[in-house]
Length: 481
Image (cartoon, rainbow, N blue to C red; front, side, top):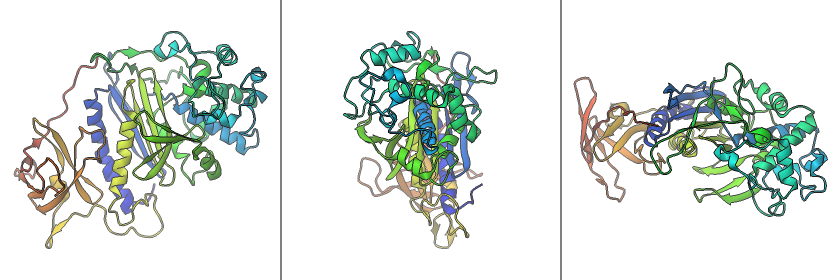
């Protein structure tokens, strides 16, 4: 267990709030359920589940439930290739046709393993016949995968553009089988899951008696109902999109991509995986980049790597800050689940907690005593004012607001916002019953006082002045189907 430094203490405090923020966001977006796991250093600090695993049976979601983590499979597959490259079993510049001879004589005869791993091959994403993504037919098997590629899978020239391709990673699965002379499942167990002790992470449907799959649900597109969706085998695309896992085990895998952790890969190989091969605009319009089976994005001035995944009725995301040792995994069981938004929000809360720490961003313990106190409360004169007395969730007919300590600051955060930090405001302690809103220009009650009314037990009854709010009631259940 990591030593409790100032920075780690502040991060843990932010994560205590993050769980409640995530629960509200899941409720507000009408997502059936979500799992979240957060590791800092070697410690699993958060492992929680909220909502339901299945809306029809109303089974509660737990941390042992398994999700189809879809394109996270590419990250796991790429890790296996880097392990084989370290062992000199293959070279990433080898052509895939050297192992999958059916590619000889096709436009892809010279396409390399690295080009497939980085989505630079130019191969079709899912073919013209992609009904399997709507549960209309089976995912392609080996024969159909190769037939599609040979019959016109070349869409653009190799290395011309970043062209995401599930079929390209399907070919990588065939390469792994040829190189190791084992099935893809056996290869991934030997190279990835077994070394990390992952027992609930498998390359496709978990058909064991101990399996505990969630039910995926449709998105809210043209009505408010969510319907259960099937979760078929990924067929020959298991290397691209087949894996099943839990948030805690996926975070454990992400931990193996932190610098200094050599359970699976050397730091040199991790740097090779995480180096940008392509830049592009993500679906929100923000600039992002891609390495070898690895997504890259910037959050709060830090580079985060990892992957996301979209499956029939499920949406998932993992973020890793490889230098600070932070891993965040969020899994949701609806096709429009805001997994990326939630993971990013948690990352921003952790980073925000470090803003005024005496040793910012030293999240993993160092030798020697911790300095200062990340939980120190402001004082007025010689009297200490405990921030905790002001904290809580408050609401009116107009809005809802959380008053929370993040690092050494007291913030007002709207859980209605998908970004907990973008519109957060810092509150100033005046005395034991009064806070002041900041002088930031805007439409709110700029610079005004917030007067707290406490009962005899010190519980907040109301806040008046700049706000007119009372403690929020518990979240009301809503129909999901």
